[in-house]
Amino acid sequence: MKLNVIHPGESSLGVIKSTIDQGEPIYRSPHVGNVNASELSLMLGIDAMGGSMQIELVDTIRGDDRYSDPRNLVFGGRVITLASRNYAKSRVVGGCDVEPSAIEAAKLLGVKIDDGSQVTLKTLHTDALVQAMPQTVAISTSSEYFSSIGEQAYQLVLAESGGIIDRPLRMVDGEGKLREVMEAGSLPIYGLDGSKEGLLPPLEAMMAIEAIKKVLDSGGTDSQIVHVAGPDMIRYTKLDEVMGIVSVIADRVLGELGISKSVQVDYVVPCMKTVLGSSGFAKVLGGEVQSQYDILVGELQRVS
Image 1 (cartoon, helix red, strand yellow):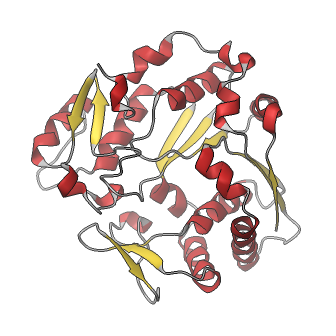
Image 2 (tube, one colour):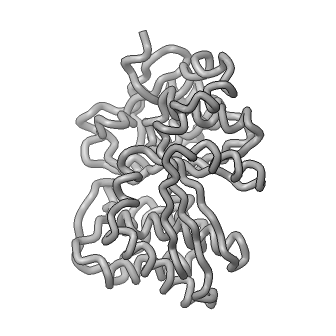
Image 3 (tube, rainbow, N blue to C red):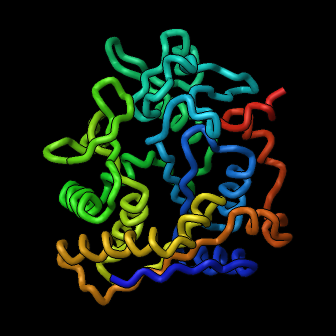
């Protein structure tokens, strides 16, 4: 497989319009707890243009992450603390249960809580976002998105990653905390079949899965991914070493799955800031952003 990385610069809006015209979704991968007004503008704007979005919420971050603040939820203009910083410290969002005092948030969101069941930070954040978004926005957490390529493919991705990436792998232990391991061995995969412990795919593997999933979804034909990116993703996709590893992982896994090596994936990465700053994009936004924002997770300083 050939991975062709494209940064369209000022033509970002044109790339998005072309993708929408072809009936293809736009991709975005914010962290859980980092869906702010800018994120919402992008989602609602693309919906207004007649397009669809695939949102992959990265849930393999720490529950007390200060950047995305997943331990807090903004709902109805109120800030609801789902877990104390001490409780959430070092725990992975996807497996970190909310504290008993946060059950109020679940009731507000209409989440059914059966006796003995577990409600996690990612559950409440994801439900808030699903409730706020139009149906053209498909929302899943990263662990769900990664496992959607199938168990065989996911196993192959991690096996190839372990053989190529020369650094410790991360895993989630039984308490939902992060650990580093040198050997994958027979460890389970986090998120596969709902597992709350196991190996986490490294960055390069996460990005390879996006390419693999697109090729599998298209029946093994040439594909294009348009992933509107923030500063971190822009930086990753401009590192030749990182993208070289992504390409090798995807190529080997697709080969193992019987997909022709002549397949090409155009990985188009427009800068989110450029897209949102476009006068053409601004025209499609109405007054919905602020009214819907108060039931979303995001920047707490915006809530008075």
